[in-house]
Length: 462
Image 1 (tube, rainbow, N blue to C red):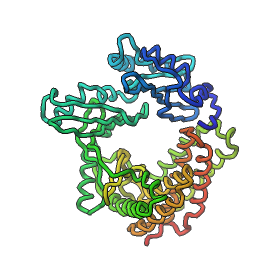
Image 2: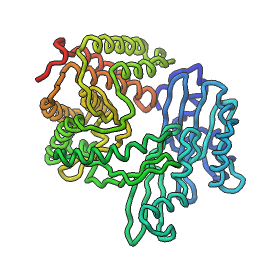
Image 3: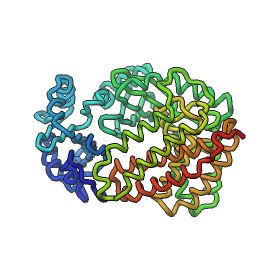
Image 4: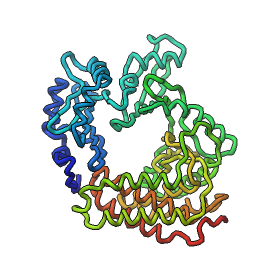
């Protein structure tokens, strides 16, 4: 961790972020809770999300003798609300069920009142109760036995959590052995039932891609488990991730050519993707919605002024400029939007791409995903400067293919790119990841430059 802002709501924040390992008091508490011989120097910071004055969420991972890591989430409250949370009968029932997974006499949670810190042993999560079912060996064995149409005794399931964001969601990997075959699946556990609607949505998109010859594939939906709030998908097998091809392309001309081809396919496929009709989308995202999100994230920048004088004012001015430009530009046509469209959400499979993480599907301006794609290239270049020559070629390939868009608007493309650059700047601040301050300031400067070049002619169509 680099500089840690001073936050009057969380005076103990620096204590939670030692230079290495986990805080000693956390390790001591986890030992008392679980009877596992964890040590602070063995702890690994697996997740960190900070919202100044609002909350801080952390996941620590500790090695155990079983070979399975012990994950413990921490939620830092900005007031005394933690006492009320653990006293909630619903929380207590969930905690009792979670404790049954632990050695006799263990506890599934501890609320450290003097630090306003709630520690929960995975899979206990007050806001994502489906984790208990999704991580239960018996429940998932029965679920896959039902899918295969065979007795539970004939099915073996290996369960591994691969991406956990406390109080938000979790992804599990399931390796299922049955009938002499071993098949891999992934399950996405949400707070709510959004995964249920995604089954027909993903099937509809697959049909559109086949009909229009789009060189994209999607993970196939397999089933939805209501008690776990979980969408189960077939694993997709790609040759490599598109983001790893960036590294290879630095020194390999063939990889560089392949990378440009994949980026072109990403842009061309996006045009067809936007025109697909998908029923049951949760909402429409307008520029006003995007601005509201940026305002909400930016109004809690307590302590940022102390580590970077003037940066909060730059962010405030930038939001005002985005607001003025969105009011000036002609309304943008709407289309289907991924919501977090970027190169790191693609796998390469031969000459095709596999698009991942479609749980943000909605309707929005047709330049939104393209702007986000370009902004993420900018973010990558700031964090990994040596990739900039390759990233510049990616941008050129994407822009060239994007010229074929039937409703091309250079002004809206720049607007969405600047908004996404600012979004990633604020997220960098929320992560407090190494060099977060340089990344945040760099992205704000890029957003200012991008917005300054918005064409005065507005939404020109070519």
